[in-house]
Image (cartoon, rainbow, N blue to C red; front, side, top):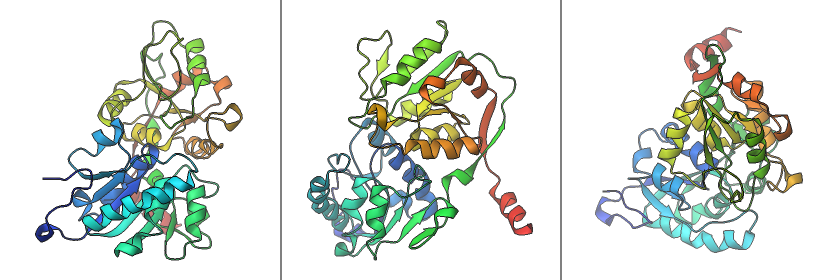
Length: 332
């Protein structure tokens, strides 16, 4: 039976396993989708190290999980404080390789992984198309930690390119655009960043007969006329995406990838640091890339309109034919 909270299996039945380490949210979703490719023969037996949330509990049910208390953005002292807990979990589970997509939890796991005999591997998030994240820039300076980018044009210096999750999807015609009967609005859940502007804009443009499901995270909407849920489990979250005609979201990678899995082209609205909605404007990067590929519709809050929702109903995502794409590229 799987163990949880880093409870070790008996010594006699404890072979070496990989570990997947990620902050909850988009980092965890990306690593979860990558795991079968990174470790095709061992991913089901891997140790997962993350924070305890409804998302992680649902997504990793039945897996070996070590839950680590949260590390908020740029809390360096907390990173150092969590490192012994992370190393202890890896040692007890006989981890030999450690993969991470970030964020701060990567800094608690990767630089010290060799102390427990494990090989570290860092894969930068899709959200960072222009330059590495702060975690990536720190790990780039740690010579024994290989660093990988999901964008070929960023493979310079120590950065290597292997693959990108974006290559797994392409856009197709979804039929005649139509008024959406059901809309899923999700704001992300990272503390302390709120995104009230998007809620207020959606209330201004949505027809009153539209059915709306709101996941509002830490955004205070107590004075607004909506039935909000702060957090959904991963199972509930994916079900709402599948049921919705349109998904409107902050530009988080996790939501974006879950939308593509479900065949949805989301409307991505970046949070802005100028409005105290995030630590910086990095959400613009993934929204811009997704929009250019046709895999999302990027809009600023003030520009978002009912016409954009109609547009989103007329396109769909589907798994890409990677074999055909490789043959085409080789023939060029």
